Amino acid sequence: MRRFYLSVVVLVISCSVTFSATKMYSKGVNVAQLGIGIGGLGGFYGSSSLPTITAGVDLGIHKDISVGGLIGYTASTFESNYFIGTAPSTYKWKYTYIVIAGRGSYHLPLDVENTDFYAGLDLGYTIVSSKFEGTNALQAGFGGASGSYMFFGIHAGGRYYFSQKFSAFAELGYGFGILNIGIAMKF
Image (cartoon, rainbow, N blue to C red; front, side):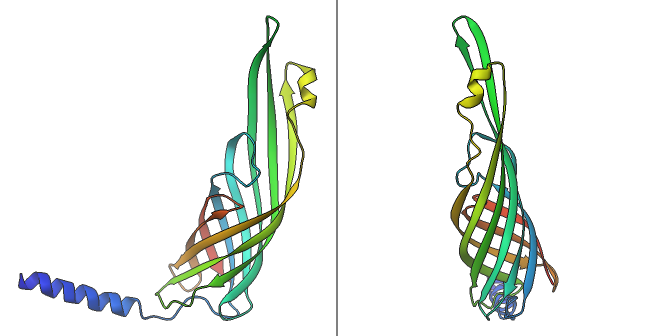
């Protein structure tokens, strides 16, 4: 029993030492990141044919605020099989999405060693293009779209730094995917 209490005391002391370090974000800290989004974009159509790939930058303009931008790419397909009379017919639409967005983040002023927690807003434009593939040329005019659109997104996430420059990150949100994970680097 005595060992148990001693173990608890050692664990509490080591956690308090671990969580008393300086925070990893401050004014002037700039971060570039590369990620993969899981879950579709807002305005996504059909079945995903690849995850959202994102690249971005955050520029520290205040002790707790950064601004920056993201670009992203993904694709999806929509396919249907049907009969016209007795003849089978199929068609498929392939969609591509290129996302360009600005973003702002508030970095929580927590002193947790090697971490940076943040939340923010995204405002951007999604460029959508589509391509028809099918056996019925009449279907080429139905169901497809190249309708680009503005979007508004939110994100909340954190970075864990393995060194002074390199980190892994995870973000939850709406806009680039429900979950975006990847690597980041200070510059």
